[in-house]
Image (cartoon, rainbow, N blue to C red; front, side):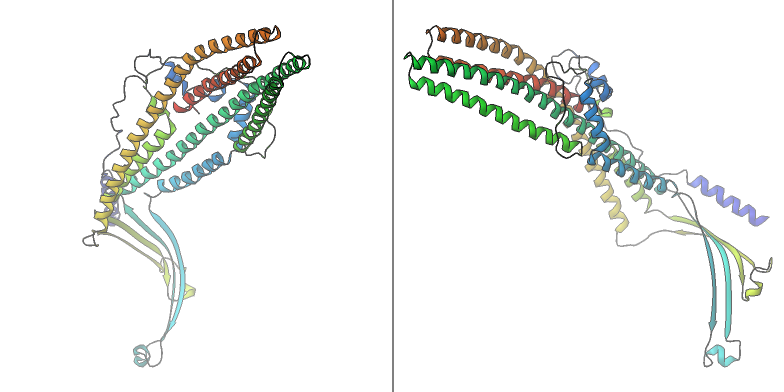
Length: 466
């Protein structure tokens, strides 16, 4: 009874000691974020809400949703990230059990025989000895200083970090799929413009040829208009080549072999769920996956400091063993005669180990400082990413107004020049110049429409939407 009380006292005292925990609990460093993403612009909370919008809500185009869904199911980088999560979850689950004692079953039988010339043999004692034992072995390192719990914190941070890595890959993947899809819509529109330009320039070439036949123009005019017609077909070939390359790039994201990408939408009809001003960075740090990856690395490094510090303090290990032991197999399992047991405990305090533990502790602190630097850099980099994207969206909107006006003027000028050329009031050089300027303006305006949509996608990515 007294022995049982002692055991209870030891266990209770050990439990009280495990309430201690060395090291600092994690606190997020102050970031002192600016009040707005973009100065001198009206703020709106809708920017912050954008990252909370699902990709199905943000991209309301059915074909694009299908492509993104396929990418999320089949992209090899994302599938690998999911496997990394499974791996770190297994390690974390194991770390949760590290605070529990070890219990093992030990069963062995041995037979030894001393030589006749040994001390035992010369003494006339029995030279043959048998030993049969079956026991349960118990060992428990009491987590007095919390180093095991700090290791569990580190394992949890690693597990959660891999989740955020997957979110970051998904965030980037959605943006890439949407961007390539928008590129294809832009190229479709540019191909229509190029085809119209081919027809227009062929008509100019045909008119010039007729004028040459009746002697109203020179062969130089015919050659120039013919060369411009051929040039427009070269532009179409370049666009078709780029379409094939963009389709291959999209198939690669889908983990498919190259094949045609079906699409019925157009650049003009594609709408994204964005209606907002510049916004404020209220929840920015908690929403962007790459920042969360950096923060979980800081949490892991902080926990590792506590674990390394605990290694320098005394270790308390409780042990026990009990079972059956006999020198004859026939009486091995006879009870209570074969029963045996022991209980013990020990404290080990490192004194001199070539400064390994102190060095490990100092290195862990340096790693924490490095992680804090990386976290701050991730916040600043992410903030700058959002700032730059908002600026580009605003400036593309301003530029599109100006370019639309220029496109209208150049197309009107082209129509006037064609009419005057047919009336013999304009030269072939004026027609060629007007056609070239109008074609470039039309192609560039479509590219600007593409830039506006892509910048909206980039904003969704920069804010952490996934």
